[in-house]
Amino acid sequence: MSVRVIVRTFSELCITFGALIVLFVTYVLFWTGIKADAAMDSQIDQLQDRWANGAMTGAELEAAGGMDDGEGVDDSPPPPEAYEDGKPFAVMYIPRLGSTWNKPVLENTKTGTLKKGLGHYTSTAQLGQKGNFAVAGHRRTYGDPFKDFPKLRKGDAVVLTDGSTWFTYRIDTKKPYKTLPSDVNVIDPVPRKSGFDGAGRYLTLTTCEPEWGHSHRLIVWAHLDSTQPVDAGKPEALRR
Image: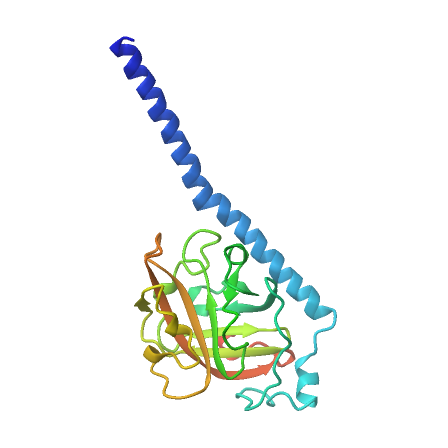
């Protein structure tokens, strides 16, 4: 085989390999995002349909003695029903990440679940209940839900709704805390590094670090600041 044939064959292989890399990057950067956005929209649509067809309203909850009248945190809100594995149960809004940023929260943090939205750590508290309500999300790929996670700062609002109640949490972390994936204590009922000094109603958000890797995790902690019925209108954090 002549040197010219070898060089030509090698060049063709390089071109083919390069094309495959471009296709793979296109898939990772764009196609997974398009699919994830469609999946997340579908999850939110499912939730809204479910809430419209039988969810108890905030007024009904209040009449049943299960909520505060207006903003404030009820000391004994009724626990929600067990979340259905892999299914959406709430929508999260973080104004710091954009006025149109909203993502569904599903039960469990399995790979397939995180392709459709944010995932609730099944071992942690339910939304608004005593303990630590912990949620994970992709930093990049599958819609990049937590792409701008490093922008989160102390005092930022994280608002969630389960269709009947608005829950407004306020971040207590000055900036995201960096740790290793093995540091599972970050989702404890009272996380050691959170600064919380006793039992409460807390929220933990986790994502990968660096932006395109997963060697570390970024964490923010928040406390439940207020609740209000959905039919009382949007909470202040979403009216700005």
